Image 1 (cartoon, rainbow, N blue to C red):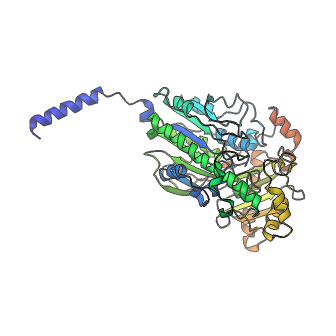
Image 2: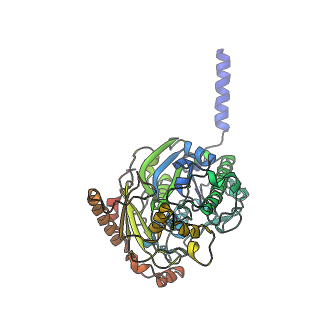
Image 3: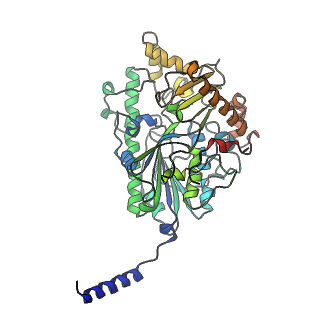
Length: 488
C-alpha cells in the first residue's frame, strides 16, 4: 500500500469512527438479564445431568456456551415458594411464602423493586405463581401460556420480541416462566418414546402405567427444549444477546413420587446454567453450591450495585461466574410444609453439596399428596405401584420409602443422587450427621422457623390472605457463616 493509500485509509477510518453512534450505557456497562424457567423438571432427566431418554439440543447448546452448576438447589420443591425465593432472595420462612398457593408478606421487595431502582424494565412472560401483586409488579409480557395445568402450552414470541427490542438504551430483566413439563402431561409427542425402551429412574416402581406416563413427561421435556430455543433465538434476533446474562433453571423435580413436594435431592436439586458472553467462560462446570436465594444478589452485583445488609438471605455468586472462585455456599437449606397438598408432614433439611441431612418432623405420620392419592388424580400409575408391592421387592421398597419415613435420614448425594441408601444409622457417618443436624438447628433459629407448628391449615390460610402470623426474624449474623467468600 502506497503512502497515499495509507493516508486515504486513515482518513476513512477517522470519518467512520466519528460517524459511528456512541455506545449506550447499556452496551458499555450494564447487562440485560434473561431468566428462563422450566416447570417441574427433574434435573437428572436432562442429558446435561446424565438423562438418557430425551434429547435437549437447545439446553445443551446453552450449556456449551456458558457455565453449568452441578450443585444448584431451591429451598422448597413447590411452585409458589421456590419462585418467591428466586425473585426475592429470601428463604421461605422469611418471605412468608412457605406453603404452596400462599403469598409473601406484605411489603416484601422483589427483583422488580431492586432492579427497577437501577433503571431496569422488569417483565415476566408465562407462569407467575407469586404474590401479592404489590410485591411482584412485573410488566406482563404476553404470548406464553401461564396456566401450568393447561392442556396446551402455547408459545408466541412476539411479546418477548417487543419487550427485548423496545428502547435499546434501557437495560431489561425478563423472566420467562414456561409451563412444561408440569402435570398433566398433555403436549408433545409421547409416541417418540416407546415405553418399553425407556430407562426408568431407580426411585420409581417399574409398571406399564409408569412407563406410559413417563413417556408423556419426556414429550413435554422436548417441548420445554423447543421453547427454550425459541426464547434464545428471539434474544439473538433482537441484537442484544452479546450483552445479556442468561439463566436457565429446570425448577424443582417432576410430579412423580419422591421428587416434587419432597426434600429429597430429586425434589430440591435444580438444573442451572448461566451464559454471559465475554464474561462467563464457555463450556465449564462447577461444583460450587448455590441456591435460588443467591440469584437476585448476583444480578444486582452484575449490574454494578451492591446488596444491602439484611436485604437478602442469599449472597452473590458473581465470583463463581467470573472464574474467580469455585466455591460459594457451605450449605443449602430446604423445608417442606405439606398443607395444602395433603395433611401435615413438615420436613427440614440441608446439604453441604456432598451429604444431605433430612429431619422428618412428623415421622409417625403417613405421607399423603393429594394429586397422587386424592379423589382428583392427574395420573393413574400410583395404584399400579401399590399393587406391585405384593410381588415386587423394588416396588415395595420405593412405596414404603415414600409413605413411611424415619425421624432422620442421611444420604451421600454425590454417590447416591436418588438417595436410596440411608446412612443415618452408620457409625462411620455419625460425626457428619451431628455436624449437619447442629447447622440445621442454627438455621431454623435464625429463620424463626417453628418447624411442625407452622404446617397447619390456620397458618396457610393466613398466608394466603397476606395476614401472616408474625414469625419473621431479622438476620442474626449467623447466616454469613454458611456462605463462602466468592466475589470479594
